[in-house]
Length: 149
Image (cartoon, rainbow, N blue to C red; front, side):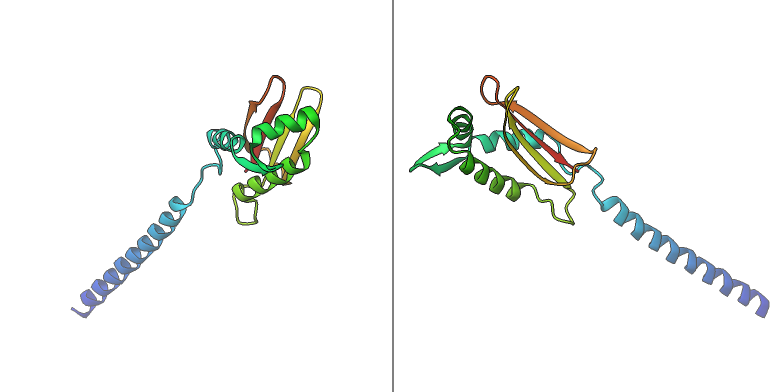
């Protein structure tokens, strides 16, 4: 009789250990599935960002001017390029966090014509994993943004 009780106690103990291990595995599985495995940024998000940024208005020479118009002025007359550079850096740094804990490793904003670079803003590290978008502004002027994951 004592032998049967000991065997039953051992079986109950074994069952308790199995339940504890199963609960711990479920907790690890929950944390694993909860982490975001997608890329940090999608191309459509960058395209939307470029659209919004181009129509953002700033104060320039006592008037309100859209970024797109300031790009045209910088390209045609080489005026306002410093203001454009300053404003675009502020907008991009506020929008694309490249801090240590961020999924974004870096970015590159390039405004160019076929044979001439108008403005280049880079920050962070370039990787092989990136999303990007480009958009023509005027006939040959193109704005391009790559965000590195």
